Image (cartoon, rainbow over the protein chains, first blue to last red):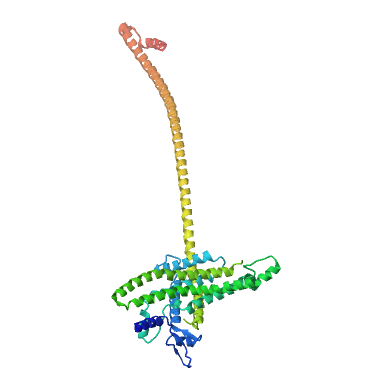
Length: 286
Length: 156
């Protein structure tokens, strides 16, 4: 029983461990074996699997879209162009609906985020053991294939979005306008004395709300996908428990995968829409 | 689950992807979409235009047919009038001609009568002379009495 617990625990731990490359505490560079070693590497380490899969999926997205964009025609479109166009039109409608200003960056940004996040999320539907088993077959000890279950990936994107909102806030409203937005609300007053009095609490609240945007943006995506993958891992554990449990596991896996299609789409969509909304807020005066 | 350099790696990847999309993917696609939208809108406008033109053409055709009908009526009416006129003229001419012919016939008849009468008169004179000569036998001098008889014939 103890041994089984150990394997179950180690199985889950193994699945949650990124392929981390960094400097060992003893001075050598290499892959971390286990969570402790990865933690000891500290900040100056990199998750090779997250980077590989996210860049590969992003490149796949760009490759497919660029292939179509190169031979795009305004005449009768073929099947691939039709598909790409429906995605583009969908994004364009969303941007038009949520973004009041005029900025040519927003739509490509939304398209990139939506498709990229969607592709990364879709990796969750690949049965949890397939790719790690192939990887271990060729000597790679750890392999987490869903980049969006790595907070580094989601924070990486939300930090990009955060700096974009800061940049456009400063550009559109000017430093003074942006500072006023941070310090003159939500408590407002005509009285100059009260205004000064409200300065500190206003600044405090507004900065919290400013910082909370990228954090909630990335944690929402990470949390949903991490939980989804966790459930897939737990379902996968059932396959070890005899054929009755295995059958149940199969049914559960199928059911959860079907339900998960909704989540991966929805989370990609939410990430995109919130990005548009945050940038719209950065563009609009209060 | 540690926050590490991957964060920046992801941010850089994100920036590069967005840049690439902004530069090479979005513009051609959205341009093609807008162009097609414009083409379709133009096509629809042209269709409406064509329909209007067709309606106008139909109206014009109806007008032309109506005009043609009126004209045909007018032509028919004037032809009828002309026919009547011609008939009337012909009648008049025929009447005149008839009268003229009748007149000529009358004149000829009169002439013929006159000539016949002259002939008859001549023959009558000779018959009378012959008759008288037979009655009177040799006593009558043809020359003398002939002169007298001619005088009688002239009195007829």
